[in-house]
Length: 332
Image 1 (tube, rainbow, N blue to C red):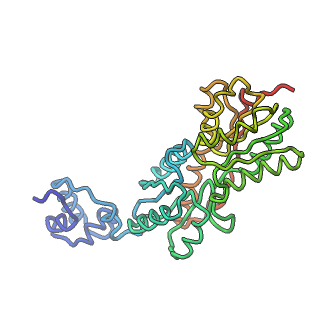
Image 2 (tube, rainbow, N blue to C red):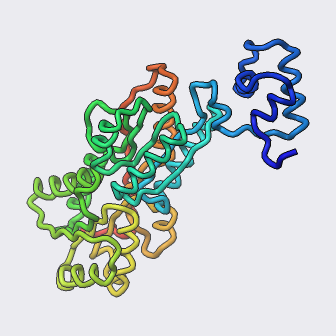
Image 3 (cartoon, rainbow, N blue to C red):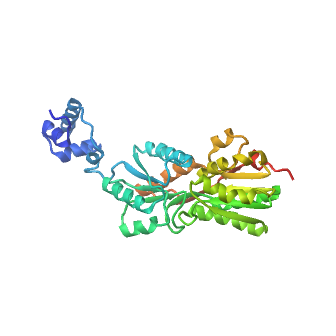
């Protein structure tokens, strides 16, 4: 007997067609007699045959696979999001294929092509700005749900958090605490819709209150961050640093080590990273996104589209929560 058993082998042993075996694998017992089903069952048990997903989908509309493209798989937000979607996908007997694009359009396109060739039934994508136009070019009929940072806010399926409102409200609270100058730290804001919203939420709140600010655009270069940040905070009092994602928050905290004794006179706020922010001293104020819920909700939207049920709102915006900790506990 060959090491790898195929549908053809099962069909030969049971003396039925490959299509009939495929019907059996996909639970279509109405397509055969009880006697035929029994023969296929015995052949599968005898050979310990494990059908591939391609085999399962031979005569099925669904592959039982969904593709997830994350911007950065090492991000704590991403971990919780994937956990949410996998928990929901499991209720539908689906498996997930996860890839990390690093927010690079060319990698994103490569993963999309690969997943399409695998026959995934739908996509969940944390997109770059270019994602939507690329899918339009592909003219694929696979349902797509964008999450966290939809590339447009048009008539697409997406789930996201209230980035603009959450950042605007948090900035106003910090202004009311007595912070009189802000330093905004962001990666390139024009790569992701989320970055644009957070940037605008903060600058709108600052401009509405006539509060001055500096903007630092950076990735993961801590020495460059120190060079740009230190001259701003050296001789300033009541300055607040707002890092617009959790990796930049940790980078900023590390860069601030010579100034830790000045917190909360130098304030620090960022996003997510909840466990870490509770453990460090001083503890760090964050805006926490409901990442697990976002993943679970994205799954509901996607499977509603896969099954063409139209029972779930295809656009959903979830609320983030401001958790105030020691790093912004400024006393007027």
